[in-house]
Length: 304
Ligand code: TA6
Image (tube, rainbow, N blue to C red):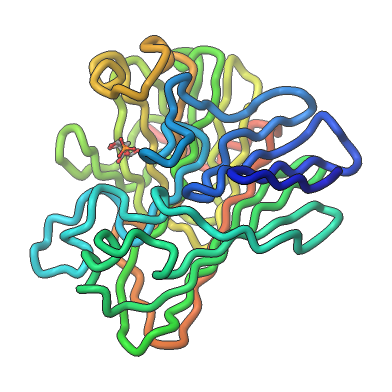
């Protein structure tokens, strides 16, 4: 059956390939599994909480209306916890929208959010509707978000798909096409131009790449084989994160502790600044992931 709903999850299976499926937890509308031809492509912590007690460690947590923790005391999102409330609210399953490719939708409004938490955002005066569309095609997997301002007050927000990919060995993995992008290094609290032709991972890594041209496809390459080709629509920024040893030890829900060797986050979003949405306005963005590809070098890696 292409779409199966349980109390807590929705599982969609590719009608033309029973070995390809996606599982979405209604809590956070968090994709917790994407299996392509029998192979799991996402990383999920063995100790991820799937009972709604805290945001899921792994899969694709959804970040809205703020990325990280806002430090501007005058901003509406400042009182909110890290990464906002979309990932720790239970979304409504809206049903299947297309047969082939199989697509389903989830919705979130203020009434679905813990009211104490919701009122931390602009004192609860903002009204919004989020609609997440998850599409499983034969060779691609797409998550699209639509944000609508259904209230009277203009609001500002960030959006990010916090995607955790499974890799065989992160020290063998490279990430392409971010060279020459401006990045904010969260560990050094410094902004610089990325000089590495391909990113490599041998220590904690936490960088926000800003305004990366959409035509640049970000790829994860593992020993010469493309694991992921990421295409973005209306998501100019990309966060790249690996917690490495100490940060993994510090996260109670991160298991196994050596799991940092088998995961890498490539998180497309609009986080370098806020999007402004006036009343009645809609904003749509998406990430399309292909679990293979040719290595596409779209930066001048041969320049000195
Ligand atoms: O992935 C970017 C990031 O902001 C990292 O700095 C790290 O904090 C990560 O998100 C996980 O955040 P979480 O709130 O899920 O522990």
